[in-house]
Length: 74
Image (cartoon, rainbow, N blue to C red; front, side, top):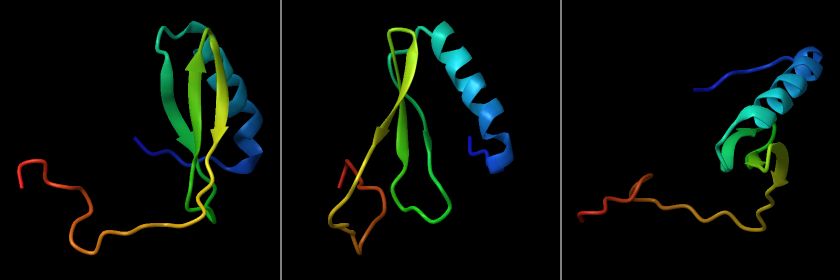
């Protein structure tokens, strides 16, 4: 699910993500944060009751001209 938040709501959003992260049993990627101008998101990762942001950076973008999602049966 995609949800947009206004920057004025970031404090509430941060508190909610940290609160949920402290209570989840999920380990690994739990979401992402991407600003409108950015092509690459920051990944939210839950580990040991905390949520951290993994900042991804791409030097070169590779694109497939034929298909967006590869067909595993092709």
